[in-house]
Image (cartoon, rainbow, N blue to C red; front, top):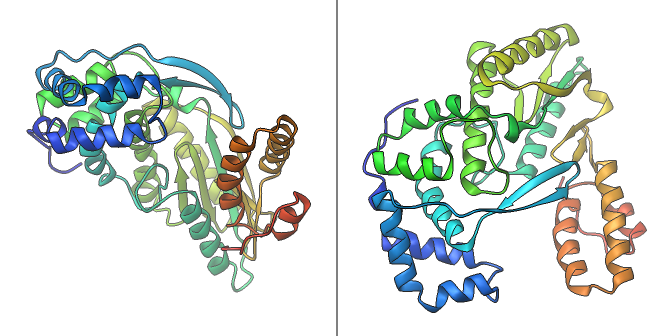
Length: 332
């Protein structure tokens, strides 16, 4: 995986890094008690935190855990304010290191990537590959309980393949113990490391199997192929690799013609158009109804800003009208 990085702790705990970490952690939290308490003596608090992180005295606080349904049940771990600053500081330095190890066709939690680029690239490839009416099939896989199933021993081998700074490794270990199974959902460090873990499957697809048209968004993988028989062999190969090397198993998988549309990153995608997934529309209707009934204008406006931005990348004019909303230009 290339060169190892040394002496990172000085960058992680530098004043400029810590101040930026405080700024990022404070976004949307400026009036919360935890932020106000930290901000009152921010210079001293940042210095104390940086010293703990550099010396090995840092101990992560207990997270607050809660469940969300998005669209399935997930347990989110929300760290205390001080620990989120430490996460941002670490993430800002190590994320580019690990991001450089990822292949271009993985899209989650990466600068310049994301759901919209993933959907657009998949649609562009479907258009190109079906231009002459040649057959095209889609393998879609989804790992079961991905974050909760990650083998930390395997993950730590990936971490130590890129980082040799002992103080930085000690800091990561304070946030993520070496032994056990699973990563907490909700932390920045979990996001980048979970993505790196899936990169093993990426390299198997591209380098070992020679697949050109694959797309991964964290634990969701789509692969295009000319025959269902070929994709069945690909499925068996990545399923075996995932089970034996990573301790992962599929919760579901399917192989079907691309002409039926491909469910990926919140859209159903065809060569000619994209639609929002049906379950996304159903959830949006419920939330709009609930917020309007409760008169919760602030939450309604925040939800509409996010959801209409997502819907604007699909062919959604009629849907917007049915919601009583002004349609936005389609960017598909």
